[in-house]
Image 1 (cartoon, rainbow over the protein chains, first blue to last red):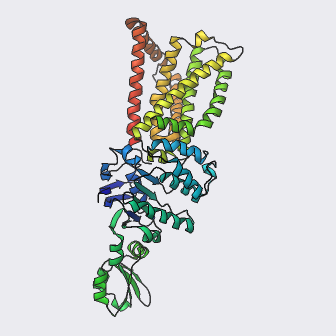
Image 2 (image 1 turned 120 degrees about the vertical axis):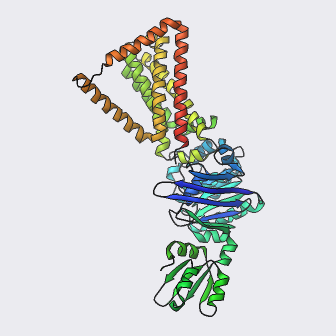
Image 3 (image 1 turned 180 degrees about the horizontal axis):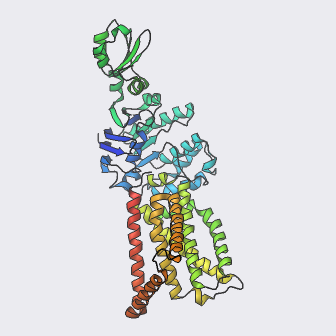
Length: 288
Length: 224
């Protein structure tokens, strides 16, 4: 299976924030979730893929092509949704469509108007009169109307109600069924990714913590809950993050099998959710 | 490039129709009272350029550049489209404003004074200067930076002229203007009218090309 996205040693320095040596890849036909706390660098990576930011170092290949040297070709096959959809506010949705559609050779007016109907978006309404959720839906309709091979979504569910969020996730899952389309999906609502993602890339403070298949992550990572007497020098180094309380601790490990061996009968060992992983890796530290 | 120009025209359709019309009517009415063709040309070319600036600031206002740059087009194509559309609009605004002057009853200047080869080249040269020097600034610093530069430039000019008039600065502007004028007259005499105009066109083209290269350089490195 060829990779639809390959990022190698990507770096970007803003002065007060650095994206450092980021590498990951997404095989064609899968959904990758990009998770991390606010300010971790998720939007920066997406903007670098779309060449909205000038990269300092590294390489980004989309469909095997350099995202800068073959910019127009690459972007012609990408559908994008930014965290805040910026379109010219006074224009109606129909007029906005007229500004975007000619850029895509596979633009499908039928799909666009069907999506507007399904999303309850009035074509003659000015963009500025839409709520944040509706603006996001419009951006989604545009992204899904030109049969893009690669959909990039930056926090698409943050302004959406739970019903539409589920609908969107189902739509994205259906989209990749032909095994030709792929999705990169950044979010901090980790439950969304547990539903649909095949791969998870966790980024924190500008660095990749891991980029792996979701099932592997959920299988290998675990939360250990036990009494404080179990915490010693050795166990502290074993855990990735610890939350200590008066009567016990909760800790995250990346080696569930070893945790079961070490703490069998002494502690409760549960599967870690993505939210657990994100929490312990960003807040838990090893010194709680 | 066609799609990018079309996009900008759709985005600014209402603005162009309404503001463009008011703008041209205003220029026609105001400048029909002036009997100095050079002053007319200087002011109208500058105002025509500002009309173009206003169009590109609208995209800044709605932060829609992020969306435009996410579409399948290179930064170079986006800048090229801006230059082509900018020039087309500037020329259209200039011609319409000059025509509006002639349409106002009691206008001080006739068609022969406003539309001749000298005034046309003078207008083109001014448009080239405004566009070539100010577009890269607009692209690099956005509308706020652009106006900060214009205001700073005005302040600097006022200070320089004040110092020069008080003999605190050795600056003979009249001599400079005369020297530039003499250089052009001597070129005209040496090359003959066709050669001279061809030379001017070539200079304007080279200046615009240099400006375009700078704008592309700035825009490619601009983080959005």
